[in-house]
Each structure stands twice: as structure tokens, then as C-alpha cells.
Image (cartoon, rainbow, N blue to C red):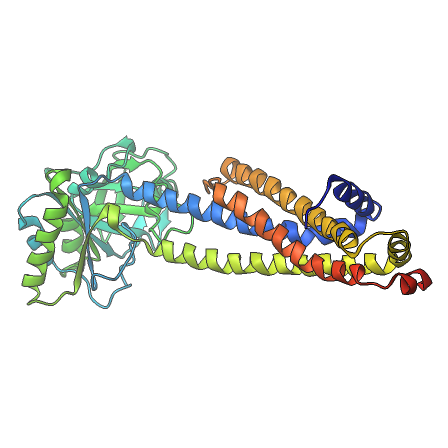
Length: 403
């Protein structure tokens, strides 16, 4: 069955005669298309942001975490309590002694209020070593990171915590009191950019202190929630990861309770969140499209009832069932087609607004721009075919008698 230009022109004219009803009918199709397109565009954009975050640490960086190999967290998750056990200093020494490892930085969290110009009762304090800066390649807004030659009294601040502790945006050389110790600010990081939905800790709120200083202040051995390490050469990274993993398994008596993975291969738990959101919103989009299709069916059933006399008259002067069917199928196509195109246009506009005014760098997924409207049109025509068949099969005498 082919639709001719006249069918579409007549369909558009009939739908235009009932603008309000047609617009409300198309709303379900528009919402469904927008939901489907936007969730894919946003999801793909966030995944690319996360991949970019992981990639910026370089191909030679790898991560050691407590837990079996299938456990997946983000590179700088900071979830110190997310595992039943933590890494130990023995694990740290094992990684340091592995052939091909050039830099190792433990990450531990410690507690205690800090006082500068203002007091922060529960700051996010990370104990690490001087290698941390070499591994993450994060630029400094002022000053520099502490190094191994410091006397253990230097600290580095994230951008946000620096503003909470001091009135000065670059409080270099100013003192911090923590556990009765006087620490001096050596540097302030530029903003750490975390992708939306990422489970990474917000290092803008972190205070970085020397590992030895934190251990001395706490009076006990620190548990390490994550070890960042770097191989001598990017080309040797996979081999170094395998060697490190084998060394840790051997040190743990054969137990595979430590996860070693390249930063570029690390599967973030954020991906699981994004996948779940994509699935849920995708289901919602399909439901919205079905609701839109039902709306088209309802409107066309009303249209068939209202135009019963017209149908009878056309059939009486020679119109065939196929011609009547074409006419109402054309109306369903126009309704769903205009709704689908409108949804795509609004989706592209929304992607632009998200990129301009939020941290979400949504990207245009051309597959979504094609599949979503085609699915919407297919659903619209499927539901529209039911009232079209009813109109086509109507007896002309009964139709002419309809008031």
C-alpha cells in the first residue's frame, strides 16, 4: 500500500482543523522521542568524560585496590570503607619493590579537625607521598606539592577546602593546626574536574598531608584504601601490572584478594549507574511512545466517528476500502512524524543547552536521532491502523445514515 502526496496534504489539512487535539496527541510522541534521544546522548557524553578522566593519568598508571579482581571502582574512588579490608604497608612495599615500578603513592584517610583562619570540623584528609603529584598530573593554582625532602610539616589543599580554611585564595606559607601539630600550606590545587554521576571523591575538598606525618599523629599503622603506581614505560605497563599482581598474590599466601588494573582499563562503578539510568529512562521512553501511540489511536477513533458521513459519501461515489485506509494511515503518519521530528529538534537544542550551562558534556548520538523517530513513527502507524481499518470497512449505507 503506497501513500500519495494527496493523502498527506489532506491529512495535514484535517489535523490542522483540530490543532489543540492534534498537539496534545503529539505530546506523547515528542516526550518519548526526547527521553530516548537525550538519555543516550547524556549517557554517551558522561562515559566519554569518565574515559577522559581516566585517560589523562596516562597509559603507565595502574591502581591497586583491596577486593577480588572483579570488584570495580573508579580510579580515585576514595571509598575507604567500601571493602571489608584495607591494604597494608607490606602491600605498599611489595608494589614498590616490583621491577618496572617508578612511582608509588598510597592513599589513606585520617580524621581530625583543622584550623586555619577558620575551623573545619570534619575535613577530608588524605595521607599520601610525594609521588602522588607525579602520578596524577594535576596542575597547581599556587605553590607546589610537598616532596620527600620536606620535614613532614607541609600540606597541600584542594581548591574548595582552601577557601573554607582561609580568607586568602592562595594561603601559601600559612599555618594549619591539626592534632596539636603546626602544618604549613605548600600549595593549592586547581579544580579537580569530576564527571557527572562519577563516584570519584571530590578532591577539591581534600587536604593532602605526608603519609609519615599522618601515621605519627594517629599513633598507629594506617590502612591504605588504594595505591596508585606508575610503570617506567607505558609500553611495559601491562607486564608491570601482571608482575605486581603476581607479587601481591604470593605475598597474600595465594589469595586473590587484591585487584590490580591499569587506570585506562578501570571500569568505574559510575558506568553501572549510567547503565541503570539509561535502561530505566529507556523503558520510560518506550512507554511514553506507546502512550503516544494510544493517543493517536484515540484521536483517530474520534476522527472516524466525526467524519462518518464523509466516509460514507466518499465510498458511495466510488472510493475503495484501500483509499479510505490510505487516508487515515496518512493521518497517523503525519501525527507521529511531526511529533518525532519535533522531539529530535528539541533534543538537539537541549543537548546544546546542557553543554553550555552544565558540566554534562552530552554528545549527539546519530543512531539515536535515526532510531528514535523511526520507532515513534512505526508505533504511531501501528496504533493508527486500527481506526483506519475500522473506517475502511464501514458500510457506506450505514455511514450515510450516521448523524
